[in-house]
Image 1 (cartoon, rainbow, N blue to C red):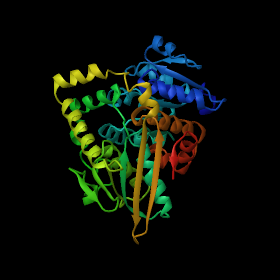
Image 2 (cartoon, rainbow, N blue to C red):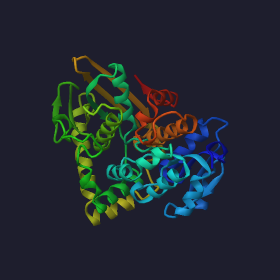
Image 3 (cartoon, rainbow, N blue to C red):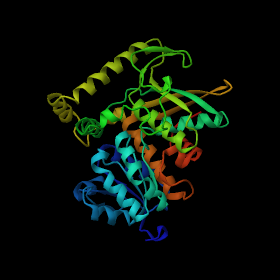
Image 4 (cartoon, rainbow, N blue to C red):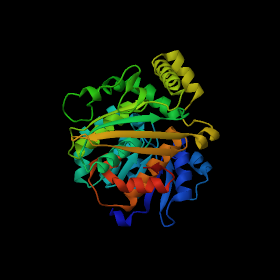
Length: 380
């Protein structure tokens, strides 16, 4: 079916999950009045309970026929139904077959590597854009590095980022994805710094950081970032797709102020405990009970959280520049919901651009920054 004759411009799949519900709220408040959109998921009762002012479509993520019918009715699907390694790939296949654009908040690196290998060529041939990394992992870093490159007139060769996730917390979907990555063996493969390219050995800057150290360029004590694996691989994929395979990038965790070092160390210790817990059955069972799928931070945490990202970079001549990004709301849920919705709206309204499996910065460039500023992000 031709795009122009589709019933919907945009369908939100996984709308009843924790992040999906926030995406529905964002679109209800901010979508263009003439946007034809719908919510979708596998449970009609839960979809009805959303109270969304749009049609509700039922499709099971494990039923290819239902997903094909869903994809054929819309121009764009944005998915929040994780773990994406379990519940995302059949929907991607259905979208490519239907000629439907797709984005999601997945930062699951091994899964994205498989999508590239299996479906990139078909998506290009079908003139379809498949855009993962549209949430916290890894839209902010990917976009900020792109904007930094523009500040340096396309000559960026080295970039480093500091992430301050505020008081961000884990949702049930994030915990489920972490457990699946361990069980499937994906976690081990994701430690390859060049998993998504370019095909070369990593520079010392690109090796995943360990411990605590002082970085002179960033003028801060830094440690490994909780989103660093996803963000660095996403930025390297963008650089490869954009013909800049020599760009070196690393991301760190750091908090400002006199207590910044203590907060950085404490956060790293908590993250280490979390990762250890998902590897052991008794503790992972406890984690799942505490944060089951569909659960997330409190309303107060969602509203009062925030994400800060500062990216410093230089070109071959030594000229330097910086980009800062401040996003309102809990990073893992509110920021992810807004980012993915704005990507989906661009897919629904903007036909120009490269096809295949691509990153947010490659798909949308500065136009995405314009939309995010309108949605409340501060980007300078």
